[in-house]
Structure formats: structure tokens, C-alpha cells
Length: 177
Image 1 (cartoon, helix red, strand yellow):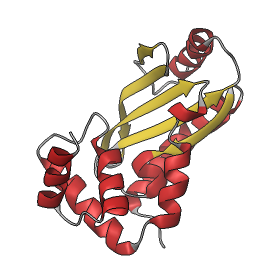
Image 2 (tube, rainbow, N blue to C red; image 1 turned 30 degrees about the vertical axis):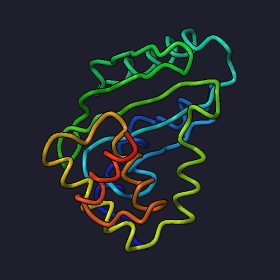
Image 3 (cartoon, rainbow, N blue to C red; image 1 turned 60 degrees about the vertical axis):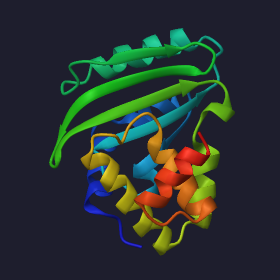
């Protein structure tokens, strides 16, 4: 399968900022989410890094400073989820297609990463699944509702439960809380 233009652009941004190179010094960084699966609707890059260091705040502080040393990064937001991890966010990074957001999730707990989900979905996702996911994600993006982990719920509903459209997805959400 050919990579989409948006996936190539996202990979270019990751390379331009040397994100994987920077993060490898701290542990195991992997691109997850829509970029990993080439299901990009919203200009958003998610990277999870499983770190070896127990002190997440120390690691995050170091990564934060290195990100800000890049000429094209002017602001980094930090969100501390103590027990699960810390998220570093670059809310606006100018790319060819517009402003991208970049979230780097730093954790020392593998179960808090998206590693397993991405590997599983890569193995199970058909072209029909991809088409249905993109349609549902597009609907939510147009309504500015593609946030707070809804993409993961869409992936699971389509691939694991056979959801095929927005109405079925909404029904699935209602049934599963």
C-alpha cells in the first residue's frame, strides 16, 4: 500500500525535528495513532516513548528543553498524568498542509503506550476497515469532535465489532458508555 501524502508529510516533520533520534536516548519511541496507521484526518502526530528512567519528570524536563532548542519550536505544553505518564505537546508546527499538533507521551509503563494496539490493528485491518474508519473520523473531524481518544474508539469499533458507518458507531458508543 502506498503512503498517503499526509503520512509522508508527518514523517518529514518527525525527521526534521529528529524526534525519534532525540527520544531514543531515553527509551523506546514509536509513532502511534493515525500516522502509524496512515489514517490521518486531523494534522496530528502521536509518539509514545517507553522510558527506562523511573523519574518521568526528570526525563520530561530534559526532552522539553531539547525540543525548545529547535529553531522552529516556540512553545511546548506539559501535562502531568502522574501515574500513567507525562505528555509534551507542540500545539502548532507549520507543515505544508497547515499547522500540525505533536504529542509525545512519556511513560515507564508499557501498558500506557499504544504499541500493542498499533501492532494488532496493522495485522487485522482490511481496506474496507480503513475506508470505514476514514469516513467516521472525517465526520467527527468536521464536527470538531475528533479529540480525547475518540480515534482509538473508532479503530476498535470498526475492526473488532464490525461497525461500518457513523450511525453504527454512535449506537456502539451509546451501548458501551
